Figure 1 (cartoon, rainbow, N blue to C red):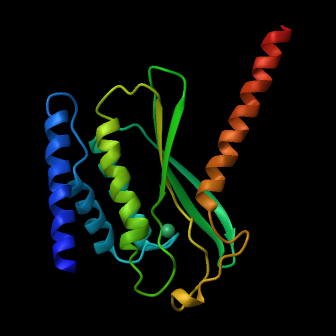
Figure 2: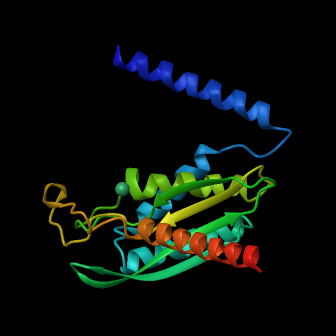
Length: 203
Ligand SMILES: [Zn+2]
């Protein structure tokens, strides 16, 4: 019974993919799940990828290399986070694509994994990153109606030397370093822009 459900679900996915491929065949490339999956596989094969580790450095090289191969303009935003494990070097990877109109669509994921021995984050830092890399391939190959920003965050998981999933503790401040860094930058840019606007209005 269960098997029949799975088969039914699988065939509707196939139909959906066939339809969307057909609809999109003569305009732009469409989302390719196989490509997304290959990214996840590659990241998982690196092994654990907690902030400031050899694993995450290899993940950064992979993500940046893939984005550049799609023709995306890549910004590497290095910063330092003060954590319970000391000062950790982190890197957000951001792509900003100018659109025809002024609105911004921001897609985000995190690519770090939580610091549990042998934890490789397939359906977590891996799956989100694989999906976003495939989206980047599509968005970077065309002119988009709105501005599209793609942000791959470092340091989103709770920082600590955990022994297993049950030992992980989330506090108000030991996580989301990457997204908070980006939010602070956007806010700083906005207040800078509004001061400049005020000055030009006065002048
Ligand atoms: Zn996560």
